[in-house]
Image 1 (cartoon, one colour):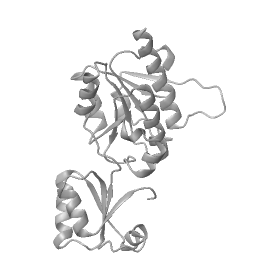
Image 2 (cartoon, rainbow, N blue to C red):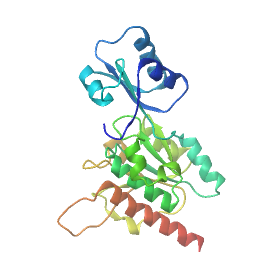
Image 3 (cartoon, helix red, strand yellow):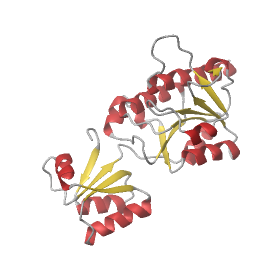
Image 4 (cartoon, rainbow, N blue to C red):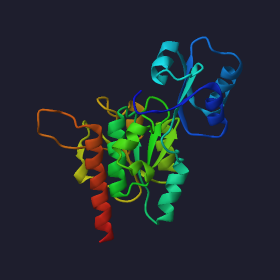
Length: 250
């Protein structure tokens, strides 16, 4: 839990929800379902925010002695964007969209490093799932070395459906980093509007995500270790896309 931005107390969490503050998730003490807690859970449900009931001791540990009143919200370090805002941003710059999708990435340090590279190569935005994914917390912000303020991040309910929409409605090419792919990433045409998918640590892309990729590509390796850190793999792939886009400009 280290590195999260917390909001403690029933009134504070209720105000955060009603004001539209970006909330990653909410923890509620077991057995607390009356009055203001019922209102909080209803507001969270309406907003599509994850909430779960946990042992009160867990809340005590997170709060460090603060009066949490049985509820703690995990607030985003910065506001999330929407996929449409990311695409509009690319259009405003008169550039073909360059998007990154993180398929259930869990390590905030990897996320921060990816944001830092994304800023360096001109990525227009990053898309993450709402569930089973690291969110925009202060650890991500610190690791990104400030890139979190410049790279737009959108959260979506369903990654596979989002990829399908990006392909069919916006005509973007979907590529995925996959160790089992036949084509090396340097041999692929990575120009034009593109979405690069980076899988989770250890597991890679999920089946439905992989099925929605137009072109899986691999990063060749000759060492004893058969996989790269997610942020390293992402950086290698992003820089190849950047290189090919720069060649078209020259």
